Amino acid sequence: MDGLSPKPFKEAALRAFPFDMLSVASEAAWELSPFIDDAYRQRSEAIDVGGQIIAVPRRLHFVGLSEAKVANLSAAARCLATRATDGYLRQHALRSVIDQRESWVAPYVVLLLGEYVLEIVEDIHAALPRLDSSLYAQFVRENRQTMQRLRAKATSYWDTYHRRCYPAKRDYPGLSALHALEEWAAWCLSAMGRERTRPLGHIADLARTRR
Image 1 (cartoon, helix red, strand yellow):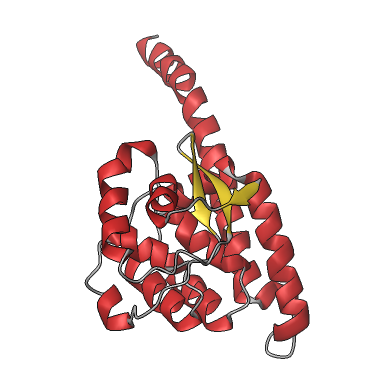
Image 2 (image 1 turned 180 degrees about the horizontal axis):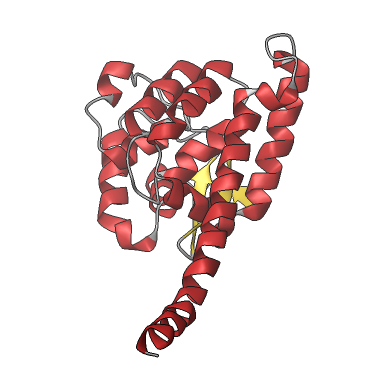
């Protein structure tokens, strides 16, 4: 589900993060306000973060926001910069937040896997060993429909633009990364199931020990 991003920008920024991050989101809006083109209106995507629905803008148009300036922004502002219309700015912002271990950062990383810029999806694929697998597994479990849309978009971009570089679809970094996230989610669910049964097994072991 998606909708038009609200105007002005501050309102959109407040809706782009969980409710308990109001002060952080307000600071991000204040930091980026001098650079935002508020006449540029794009749709947002509804994302579940820990049971709260946020609205991540699909695109934000910044004027005069350089990579050097992004480096001095807060983490939340840099997350919003990953939605920039400028692909180089998106990539720079991504690289600056991808190692953040926060559930509200995950949407700004994962959504980029459904985009067409090869260098960006390659960056995310290369960063997989550094990511918090349980955090991203939670994102997958909470956003199944979004993951399906991302896979469809990544498949389309692979077929249209990147098949020559990656003849085998499974090797395309965007799809490979999405598959890894799905595997993390499946493994975490399996681990949770084992943990739920562990106490009964533990009691049985104790009983055998006492005989």
